[in-house]
Length: 470
Image 1 (cartoon, rainbow, N blue to C red):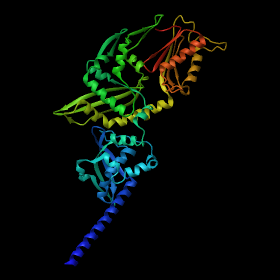
Image 2 (tube, one colour; image 1 turned 135 degrees about the vertical axis):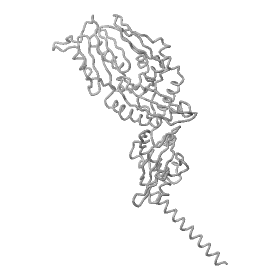
Image 3 (cartoon, rainbow, N blue to C red; image 1 turned 90 degrees about the vertical axis):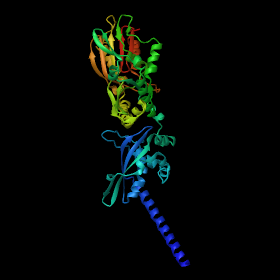
Image 4 (tube, rainbow, N blue to C red; image 1 turned 180 degrees about the horizontal axis):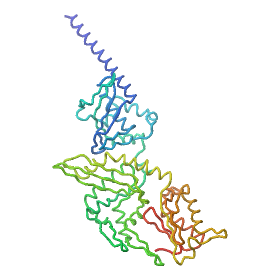
């Protein structure tokens, strides 16, 4: 009897011993596969509050190891690789663009990705971890397993920011263009917020932003998109507050008239842009789709350079069908799968070029009929004209001397593609208006003639020689 009990006890011990060895070897194999970071990830669906459903394809000679490592691979992919999109859902850039970050911050990432490490806080299995039959594939001597998991990207980003692993969005904001959100012209027209006026014999559609901003849905949409752009570090100029400030100051006028009778048409939109001076205008529109109890939102966002009206980025798409969700939630669901690619367009295409080449503006110089000097007036014995000196000044005060002389007559000089610095030497933002003021002071000091300057929107400055505008 004792021998029988001893043999059973010994057998159990051996089974336990070899099980522990097998588990240890399995863990060792899993960790080895993890260190190689062999995986592929793609977005499946976006959720609310910054979550993504992600399919992770992991490789191992044992299916259970590939499944076990899928969560770790998903979090690693969000941080270092970004998401591969689909035909209907955009991907997302990696949380860091530093290819060496993992090696530079190994003291953080080694325990973070250890078994049971902090990465577990940001990922969970979807569908109770069930794997579709088509997501298990044999490739040579190993398996490729596709597992769908949910990752809270927003919470993961905040964790890395608080640990000083990546820059906070607030720190990034100082290097991002400012944005003012406007309702799209088509939305304004379709919803009765545009009116036709006679502008010197030309029929023109004018948007009534004051009335549009009373629309509850527009308020919800602007508020939601503002929050999403703020979360990504963009400084914002508020359309409603800017409009109110202009109204309170009694600054809305249809015309500005100079002392000599010269008149300049100034639109409300130009007034708004002159006051807020954003780098970008973000036009938004949306359509609510209803199918029985289910609703979804189609959205469109187009970013335009506030000065040149050239496109800087765009995004559009339809969100998931939801039941009982508010417009704000549906919009967030629709936009989330596109917002980071949109951000990438603005920063890596538009703003990086602006930082390198300077802000693009237009400079126009007008001459009053009774001005003592015209653009073609000679200014020295060598026969140089005033236009020659202006062009010399432009070369000395633009980025890399960049500008194009488009028009030159005795009373009009227009230069386009003028590239000016983003900031002054003391770090102050430099605008088209400031550039015009600088040119005005030079002309006044050099030639002792009356001059005035004024901005048109954020991308154009007008200099008037021989007169002062009010």
